[in-house]
Length: 223
Image (cartoon, rainbow, N blue to C red; front, side, top):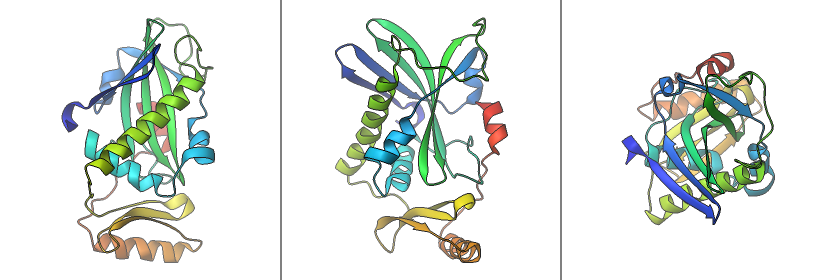
């Protein structure tokens, strides 16, 4: 399942979304990726984002789709996962790159429409969602359905992740899963020295490997 994760969500009678995990970023090279303006992350923060969302989503994505990729800013975040979306709305099909990233204290969602390399639009300019293809309302609804579907399936399996530690240096945030607590945790620090000491303490208890994320500029070049 982890090697070929595919999930089909029928969101309403006229909207179906198929989600496929993409681990090779060379997959996108034949096409252009047009960045789409969206407010998904703000919707999560304001309305539906649970306290343990950061570590739980990481555990669920890893469990069902395999290890994360490297396309995140390793000063501001600690994980990311990339997917292809095939959206069928009113019998019209469109494709998107869907990039989920830990960014500071929240989960960020970047959405790019996949188009022919002959498309005249500029890949560095954000565009408004096309309501006939995949409206902002559709994006919000899909993202919440996907998020809650993953967490619900994980809970129904009674899945318990291996202990892990993630952090963002930029805002002194540490989160993960503790074998001692038997629960997810999030810790916010206001002192960098205490933050760094706590990371070392937690990491020494794990078989931890150095993160290999990219800087923000390299992420934009890569995806």
